[in-house]
Amino acid sequence: MYKKCLSAVLSSALAFMLSTSVHAGKDNKLTKEDKIYGLSLYWKEARDNFAYFDQVPDLDFDAAYQSFIPRVLATESDYEYYRELMRFNALLKDGHTNVFLPKGLAQGQLDWPNIGLYEANKEAVVISTSQTLQHKIPLGSILLKVNDIDLATYLKDSVMPYIASSTEHILWHSAVKDALDGKPGTQVKLTLTTPQGEIKSLTLVRDSNLRKSADPEDSKPISLTRPSSNGELLEFKWLEKGMGYLALNGFHDKQILADFYAVLDDIRKAKSLIIDLRFNGGGDSLIAAEILSHFSKTELKGAIWKTRKHIAAYKAWGKFDVKYQEYANDNAWKSGDMEVFPANDNPIIVPTYVLTSRDTASAAEDFLIYADPLPHFTLIGEKTYGSTGQPIFFDLPGGGSFRICTKRDTYPDGREFVGYGIIPDVLMTITAQRLIAEEDFMLKEAISRLR
View (tube, rainbow, N blue to C red):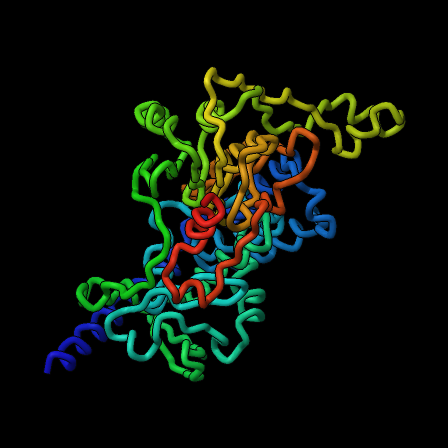
């Protein structure tokens, strides 16, 4: 009786949700002039300020802009328009260059089945599911096909074209996470292989948000346990006698400096140390440098950088004077000074392993740039996010916005890491088997090596 009643409630709610979604989709507040202006503003600012055109050598950006004019004019809703802008933006393949939807615009436009996926070595592993689905889709199952299309083809054709990413591994990570997104109430067919090797096919409804409101208890996920931060900016603890563990989970808040100095005396007692940056998405590189200065005998050298330079008269002269030709070719640059941070007295020089992951990004990557020469530091884990820089922000018609990366950073010796990620000394790969084992294998390996 309960299931029948719940089904009726879900059907009724779904019908309402779909009707409001369709109505919202036709609510096109943007005029054709707005749409052209927004696309043109993005094209203009990216063309003048973007720092990484050389990393997309096959892209004719002007021709792409022209091809998107009829595409944006053909959109039937503001949401569809912004999706086209996101697709245009993704051509630049940069993690610090993005289009952001107006607040609330996506409401009623997106949903997914009640399962969570995680990318592991280019496989989509089921890491969470609902109480109801756990018997049909065991945790650790691997998604093989979506709507009878093999996973790689489906992601490359239907998901990746909208994702702005500097690196291939983050592109795959994001695409797997979003693989099952679609219009609320629509169906998606999945073909999976279970951990026992059984091939299963089933069709699910994209109704996760609806079910959360209709039956919160059923929506509570059953999940594989994975390494995570403690939710604080900083965590310090002893793993065993003399071996300390310091997690730096974000450089976006100066509070982490106060937290660090509060435990600094304890850290000094360590005979060996693990610094965990796996959950650090960045923030202020100077905060990162200040913390790191307590682990170095010498001054710290940060990234060198450059940004594009425009002088209108030079650009005009460059049409007939080779001296100014780089301006005419939009390839003039201004270099900035390297950030140098002094070392602190009484530095902590002990064997130190630094844990990295795909989520180690931006200022956390700058931390690793500063740390690169330190002989007592060893990096272990995954390649980092591979994106940093200084974005410039602009407003778009309808309440959205976009940002363009204007600053190009490299190692002090000129080595590139944006577009590639920082490769650790000990590279470790997340696999389906390691996810199913529910062990922190990176931390375990670091502990073993320090012993």
